[in-house]
Length: 101
Image (cartoon, rainbow, N blue to C red; front, side, top):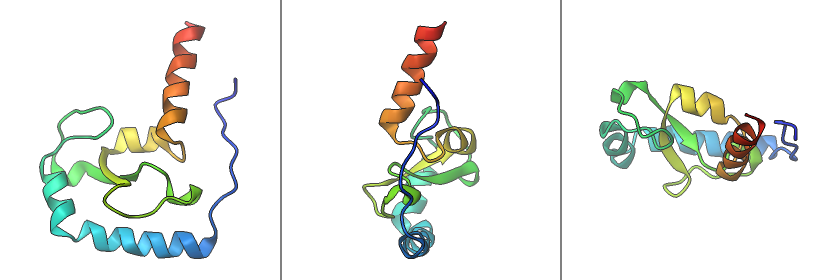
């Protein structure tokens, strides 16, 4: 199975609106407390708050929203590895890796 996933990207207006909301969330007390804990949502390793990025569990490009239910702190490595994938797609990638070894 290919590692590529096909989807219809969200509209430019949706992406613009949600990126603006994400910027507001990054300034919120809620987000600062969350990254202040220093834990990556995906790998659960500890990092300095400044080394964590905002990850959208359902990516903005795929119609995801910038809200408390969809935004998690992520280390740069995990966020880059995840890209536009959903958690289900990430899990499938891991299963495919195990099957091929």
